[in-house]
Length: 207
Image 1 (cartoon, helix red, strand yellow):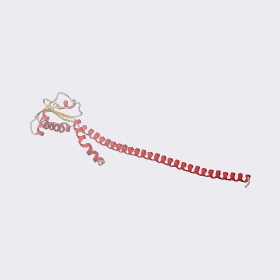
Image 2 (tube, one colour):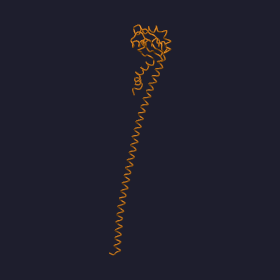
Image 3 (cartoon, one colour):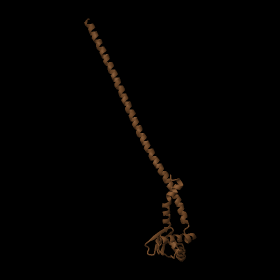
Image 4 (cartoon, one colour):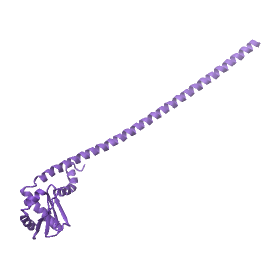
């Protein structure tokens, strides 16, 4: 083998080795690129899933809040209807003040109730200014009507002070230590407290 042939063989072997190394390097580079792309895809997928999860959680939270707000709005609207019922009832209730029924039946019954609650035979009645003017000449008849209702003789006096009430009466003993409030406002508020829930259930089935 001559020197030229040896050199050529060495160069060919070197070129073959270089090609092998380059081929292995390319394969390794391709593998690294594929691995990197796969990792990037997994990271992107993971981030997409995380973003989707957060959006779904936010949506569920917003929907839950919307449902709560919707239910509150419905309940509040229903109570507004109940309030309107009581407003109408109040207008009708106060509308008969000053009528024959008011002075001849309602006030005697309320005073009789107050007499029984307080447990005395002599009382003072406290009313608004308009009713006080009307009742000054009716105390004798009022005493007879109340006495008949309670079954014993009752003496009724008219208090000197006027109450700032729409109607009705406040009954007290003559020393003004014990009171029974049968004003329109007190009677209506007691009725509202007792009946509001029942009216709500009657109108909306308790829903």
